[in-house]
Image (tube, rainbow, N blue to C red):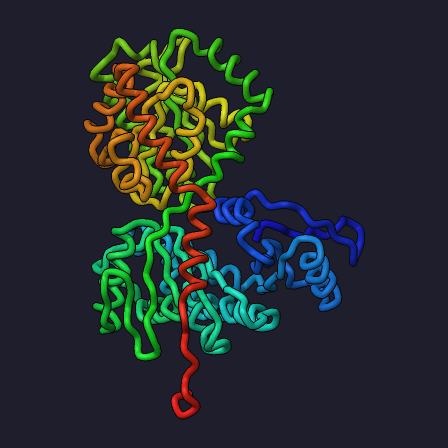
Length: 473
């Protein structure tokens, strides 16, 4: 949920509401860019702070203010439910498996029965809130893997409502998904929706094949046929709001920072990356590729700088040590007192700095081992209207299919291929850069935030769920 209340220190009943720069920011921005498509919009979500000590009066006051001022309905879950649902079931089971990492590490507890029970309890609380505020004719849009169990729970309470579900991460092949101990429950949960949306054709195909294989249902390339009616399975490419990004890019502060970076790195090629520091984002793979590039082309050691922004995550802290080993090795071998080839920030930077960095770059690398649409690559394209610098993109990112022909595609597990792609990017002719950038720019505009929202909501609104006969109910 985009808003979070926090209690004013020293008081028992006062609170302030703050905007959270966490969660599914892409969805929040997409919906806000499409407000003219809705008569009304209400967010429903968990509020991101502990409420175990809150009185019912405070919960009621927070609920009233969030609804009145922010069009938001909070769901109150206990600390125990949050830990079991989010920290264990979602982050230690679903997230790794859906990114092709089998969750078998001894310190991962997503397999535990209590984790699933917490997830089910949390989703039931979401269903309760939705039922409380639902009005006939409303469209219910459930988002992401945290709430895969929710559509079925809604359907049981609101059998004739229009319910859609969209998954913002990859859906794995059936060989991976079948290993999950709650595979049937997850699929049945999703199939409570009228429309199930996935980001790419391959994720859509994986879902249909998995449902047919695990549940034994019939299907076609466009959906599945259940006893109580069809479910549309669609492909919807999430994007950015180009006008919003370009408006921020036009800020005077961004222009000043661009000039500063040009002067600071004058005479050098600037390669950039910005990712969460977790196993699936491929930060270590990028660094290994850059290291091989410098080994192959030592003349670039003093002429290139790789700036990597690594956003802190609660998980995988041990990865930081592995990444820093490579950073230190590169800087020790190829750097000196005047120049360090790798600049590594283990924190985020202000958005104005980020846009300036993208605008100044001579290449950007996105090397996720498995990922959804990765809108960072879209932001890079929008910031490159002047330089047209190349995008080096993992073949396993959802964006890759749409960006084919424009980006330099790379297998992130192939260090030699990453090295070659860096070299190709730096020696590319201006004419080829422009040709490739124009392909990318068209795709960013065609697959915008507005088109994502309008296509999904339109498909959902056009579905018809016939009322069941009384004898069938």
